[in-house]
Length: 326
Image (cartoon, rainbow, N blue to C red):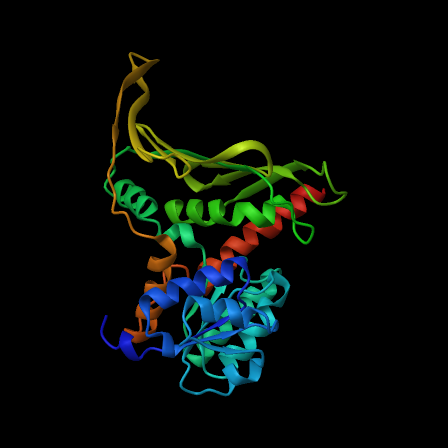
């Protein structure tokens, strides 16, 4: 990509997911143009083992004061996102913030408005929207490949790891909410959620969220970290067929089923044909996400998962939480 060899980025937070960002940036950019901030000095050794040319600091001001750094990737705990992103943008830096962008809709809205005021890119790390299979489904929906969209449901299930700072809804469901919003391109008109706090009081281990959208399109999301095996399955149903995306499957991850019901002489009859496997490019979503972020800055284009998208997903999460608590 043009100008990418000179592009400078700082990664704020090098925990489990933050280090994935460091590793990804190292595969894209000149390591001398990467700065990593983490408050834990012992992380420096881990960064150095990856690439000794990557810059490391435990002083956040080193990032803020470096005018040559035009972009930051924020992968710190969610409760710190708002303050860190605000400070970074006020120092003139475009920001990619991991999900959830903030914990409050008002804070997400404030960041979005700030990005517009300062003419900076604000992007949220909804990584599934950079998965080639998800983009292939979106393209198929545009072309009417499965007819009129009717229903979407998603299962995101696994055994652990258990969080104490957030429930399963906030940990797993943002991925699925972002995908459903991306496919339907509307905001839900009704949100209901229910769940169970089995291991820790007040922290749900499993939830089901029901979403109703304009045009009689509905969706539900089932998430749990009390499941015996990993399952990541997304079903997108239209009146002519269904997409099935199983990211946890080893092969045949994306299928198109020519199945459903059609009305014949006033009665519904089932049609049940064989599925076909849909091939898609084998690209790493996190790499695609970072490249998209850098391109949006270099080319001054709107990010796919911009501040508006982040705010809308957070609104759904907050309304689902309100329903859960009621």
